[in-house]
Figure 1 (tube, rainbow, N blue to C red):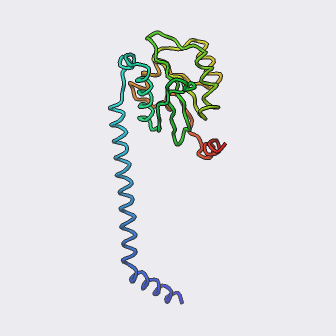
Figure 2 (figure 1 turned 30 degrees about the vertical axis):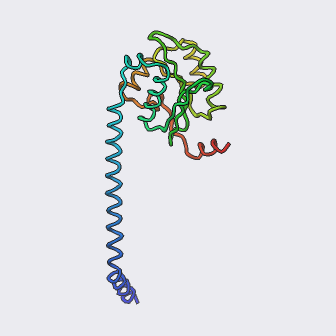
Figure 3 (figure 1 turned 90 degrees about the vertical axis):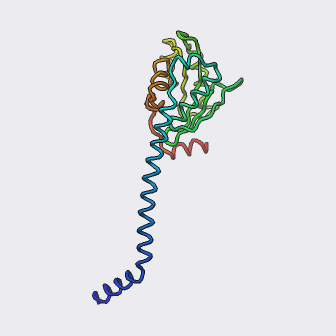
Length: 198
């Protein structure tokens, strides 16, 4: 009986060899295509990083709207889908981004003169609208200047992240992704889905 079963299996394989070969070839082609796609994606991302490095003196020379566009472009470089939403009545959000692993981010841009400082009032505004209005998982205030001690302390206590001149240099000039710079944790997809449904 075992010999008959083995013989029947052998005959089935012999008769179906074109199908087996086709499946094997298709599988190999899929693996090769996937590997090539990954290499291309890495090269494209490296090219973006190489192209999109903004020195601080260039950032300092931007107007407010161009600063917001630059922040949007830096988020896109880092793998976020992002759009500039800043305008009159933006409710403390100039750029909103989404990331598959890190959720939704709101950036409030504060372009200032070198040496200018952002005060705690800005942090209060961002905290008050980021979650309730914009459904953000992460709220960040970004400036090419600095922050007062009270603003930093309040932000740390109330989960409003801040990017001052030194952090902006690391992000824009050195190419450190914002989520790495701010140590943003990866989030579970299910949690984000529940949040969006609410």
